[in-house]
Image (tube, rainbow, N blue to C red; front, side, top):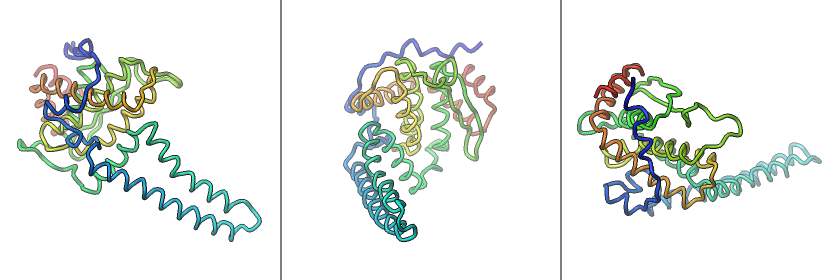
Length: 270
């Protein structure tokens, strides 16, 4: 028996959360890796400008080259058209699904800084904090484990988006399922932010969350996505604080790369 599995689902009640509410509990856009401050917006603007400049130059240069190599054919104009359309596609994605762009930029910036190997004051690795938080929150919300693996620093876990497993082609996520996955997705960054100044491992999670928004039965616009993301972070913090003892035990198990059955047993017995 696993009494803690799915224990917290009934208490998931979504309501929009402002950044001020999040800041009251010690979380903010910077600590969670959500780009909302001026410096981060400048970073995104720089990437956007870079995409326009690079692909505009490439469209002209490769279009001309194609015309010279294949005279009398439409190779040059085709190359110009395709490369010139990429910046427009970039802007379109940013307006419809901003989390995908933010997540991509976050991952690039995090990789440049090489911040994945930090340890906190108790000697626990940042990546361990991140992955153990996913495991704990996913378990409490009743999501079945899709994959569990071990890498150099920690164990890794992935969950199915519904209690019935993977989505079938064309299937959409109910609002309650989006709520669950939102909390699970944000729990890794929150787990880091509770023990470090800021989270650096949330870029991929933010991209995953954005894909889930797009798979929702109910349309979730850009403002609602921000509200939902902040709510997910707030709820994740609540669960990690409420199950602090279980979280600490899981971090130890993940650092030791224990098998998934042992991790479950440790969580349930803590």
